[in-house]
Image (cartoon, rainbow, N blue to C red):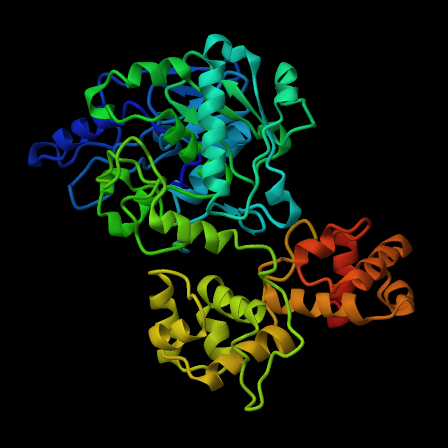
Length: 494
């Protein structure tokens, strides 16, 4: 199941013991989730309120016994009373009510895509914060925490500072908004609020792709206080819990779902892409899932590397360009970091076998080497690409030509809402080149962009090249309609 975003489930240690009891020969045919003590309630809107959100696999010890029906899946779902957010896998949030649960089940339980990602997969690719938004992850903390508010503030602000120290993100705490800290407050990105009393979690958060009215962090102070008395959680750190939850806010998923963890009882799904090699010490790894960390939930060395990979310093733009990209020998200039990053990132995430072989003309052996190597971790640079996948400089030049000259993304260039997909790097690069070089008249009359959008494009590129997809769509009047017009102009609507 999608890596959780938000919470540490206090009941998991007991559940794991129950699972170990189930995994005996006498119980090898038990249905997933059978538990005489398992309690189910329902909200007024007909949404489930289970007393646990951890799906215990049944069946043989060498197989995953996840629910085989949607009804069985609902037995491990807790929906908050207002119906906005439901929770599975300890602290994984699901928005959209019953429809959202059905979509989640179809994608992550009934059918796993198998595409490796370590961040949540949103509607437009990796579910991260892009552009200036990653420096305005503002929050308030509700006065409703009462006597515990100072404790909540200390833990949350401290956790935010910990992430800011290793990733190029900013979490401003706007304490002047605390007196009206709720989902209607447009002055903050998200409020930090008390959970409802019946919530079976310590805390939960949200993913970047969530709608505005679904972006809140909930904390169950009573559960945390009780958990501190649990001998199995004696190292419990409230700041650590919030580090984990803010990791979800940044888009990071649970580390223990990776196959390398070897813990079928903590597996969630295969829908992840690793940012580093498997890390049992990660802040995103549940300690009770054979983690080598503890309940202090501190950031590991690999957490730092992963955070820097997904949120690199300003100036290292995914779709940036350089004045000199090809050296005198006709090969990619390794000093052009934006282009190098785009090549390695595209191969790490989107380099499909068909495109590598049928479009680029790379050998089947090289294509398989890419698929295999990126399961371990993303490619770091061109030298890493040579070492782990056997690329030559000529092979790298083929990737460059595809991304910046003639490439296309068959069947995956426009999404259902009419947006050009930002993950189709070749098309985005062509659109950015058009935006940066076409005259005002061409953009206005030939391409057909609203004149106000053209004015904003021209004004922006006079200051500096528009070198990212995010920078382009952040301009006024340059939205899906303008992008589609540019796409049609470049490709004749094909």
